[in-house]
Amino acid sequence: MQIWTFLHILTMFAAVTIVAGAELFLASAAYRRDPVALRAYFGIAKRVDLLGGIFLGLGIIFGIIAAIVIGWDLLSGWLLVAYVLVALTFIVDGVFAGPHRRKLEGVVTRSPTDGSSSGILEGLDPRPLMWSTFTVFTLIALIIADMVFKPTF
Image 1 (tube, rainbow, N blue to C red):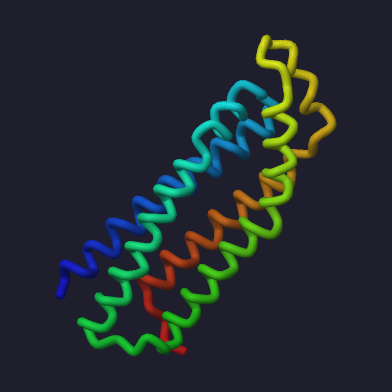
Image 2: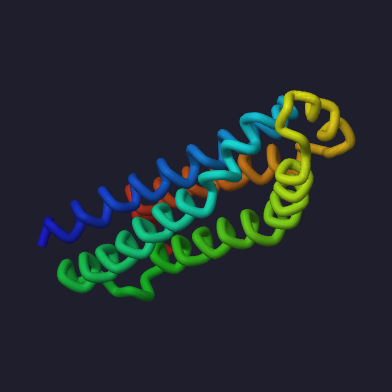
């Protein structure tokens, strides 16, 4: 029984570490308007997203198995809250940060790599990525609190 809970926690921590780390790196590089760091980020972003997605998918599967084995109602209040918070996390990241991330990637990947590209990012606003990162981190903290305390509703 506890192996499924352990696997759920392990894979979710891996997913959050990978995804949150990448998110923080991107927001920091955008804030500093650092084309070299942004190029590095966009060079590995697809692989990082894939790895984070694999861990997230496994974590969800292990969580469902753990809940069933333990005997928790999959429609209990605290789990419904978790589902909503996870959905909000995807919405914030995809809908609000996604377009800005794609625009930034286009500018960075088309810029020269000879060191003369530091000024190309001056007109871009890093605030959407900063707010998205802050919001995603807040939602992750709320998900963790919900999972740990399992409030009754």
